[in-house]
Image (tube, rainbow, N blue to C red; front, side, top):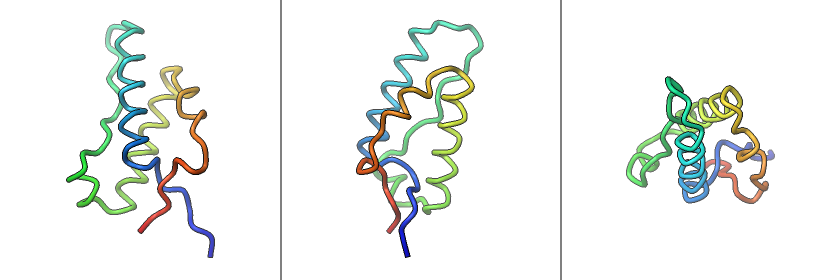
Length: 84
C-alpha cells in the first residue's frame, strides 16, 4: 500500500511557516489573519497524523485564500511526511 503525503516534514513546515509569516507581514493587509502555526517538536510528537493533516489543510486553505499558495506549491515530494 502506498503511503499518503500527510503534511510537510517538521523542519520543512517550520521553514515554510516562517516564509508565510514574513509574506503575511510584508503584505500589510489590515485584518488578514496570520497563517496557522507550524508544530513545535513537542506538539508534533503528541499530535496524530489526522491532526497534522488537518492543520496542513488549514495552512493550504489560508495560503490559497490570501495569495501565498505559490510558496507551498514549490515543495517537492521528498519534503513531505507520509506517516509513522
